[in-house]
Amino acid sequence: MHQATTAPTISYYDYIIIGGGTAGCPLAATLSQNASVLLLERGGSPYGNANITDLAAFGAALSDLSPTSPSQRFISEDGVISARARVLGGGSCLNAGFYTRAGIDYVRLAGWDARLVNESYEWVEKVVTFQPPLKQWQSAVRDGLVEVGVRPYNGFTYDHLYGTKIGGTIFDANGHRHTAADLLQYARPSELTLLLHAPVHRILFMKRGSTKPKAHGVIFADANGVAHRAYLKRGSKNEIIVSSGALGSPQLLMLSGIGPKSQLDAHNITVVLDQPMVGLGMSDNPMNAVFIPSPQPVEVSLIQIVGITHNGTYIESASGENFAGGSQTRDYGMFSPKIGQLSTLPPKQRTQEAIDKAVEAMQSLPRSAFVGGFILEKIMGPISTGHLELTTRNPNDNPKVTFNYFKDPRDLQRCVDGMKIIEKVIESKAFSPFRFESLSVVTLLNMTVSAPVNLLPKHANVSRSLEQFCKDTVMTIWHYHGGCQVARVVDHDYKVIGIDSLRVIDGSTFRNSPGTNPQATVMMLGRYMGGKLMRERHATK
Image 1 (spheres, helix red, strand yellow):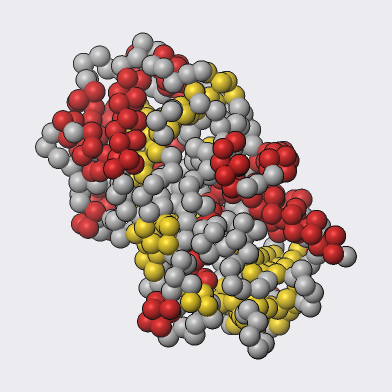
Image 2: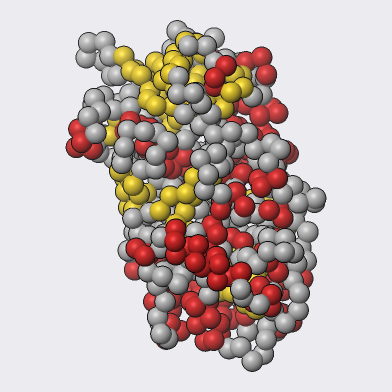
């Protein structure tokens, strides 16, 4: 790893990959086997940062709002507070660690080669995945799911199967995180140049006569603001690949002149290709959760088990006194206002001041208020979509994004169905050791809405309407995707339609989120497409 300040003013490579995230790292590692690769990452290194590597510090990176944080907060136009990665390894440095593959139908609909998909998953799994140690709380939720009919029980598996299962995790037995950056150990060091703090400002194109514009270089800045240029070497197989994520990839295409003409004109960006589909199809899988106070202490755990139902909802859980915040802190981990998960105010009032107030109030709650855990549901898809727009010409600024949570009534119905399953799990015999008998599900629903752990506005008697509960307490689980979708912006080989030598390979190309959690498939896709490009290059030689 090198700081971008050490880069020459001009350099040349076979491949230039923009974004060293969950897709970019495996892609770069693979392509470096038989070509020279430049990997440009806008953030820093994850190594040596305990806020990233330690399970016990989960949420610390997400609550760090400094300019050097590995996480960059953004607020959707819907009012839901979220985060995007700004670090080598991308979202795999910030997430709750759950690792599970996409379903067979997903692979088939994507048009991928199933054998190569499996090989690519296995390549990833050798380095970053582990079987989680299941303790009392997670076991009780698992057994409760099976008891209430989320069957069969499929044991420990990475596969996406109906029923209840234990999935993989990128946290090892010592509670240390293994990110997509670890996949760079597969790289050929002599062929890979990796630059940190190297945000790309735009892609450069050349156009001769009536032919399609051809990507041939990039301009990136270093930490001192000095501009550098990197160009493709001559060769028909040499390409620029954008792997900047669901916000970053459509944003960079627009900043480079590929996008809706009206938006580009509004920011005085020269139009290379009027492509109205860039930034469309933005989706975020809504997540809703119920906090269950426990009469006995519970282990600290992030996501380890999942119930995959036939009605399009997934049930998961996280637990632990203080939610991995350490013995002296009062916190709700992945459901904490510290990381922007706030339910006690309507979205438009959810200011930093309001969050600070909620964090302060949380500190004065009794310790007993943190003993317990959350059972969450999130929906597949989703069907509801929104869009992304530029706000400035600075690639470091967040674009404006709207997800339209629950706009489609089918999404809302799935949430209601999921909440009903959660109710049954809480009332199950298997879960009874972690339930106060005096607290009914009605009380739990009302309690969740008045605690600082969910996102949309509260109602006087929310339990009358699960639809209202879903809308009022919606959170993100950071599975947003879209913006450069297949068949709209890129073709089935991820080539940008109407442009030569340019691809987008990351979650921005997805119509639906893969499996119950996307990171496994995003890493797999980096390896899968890297292998495909490598074989094509070899065949040409």
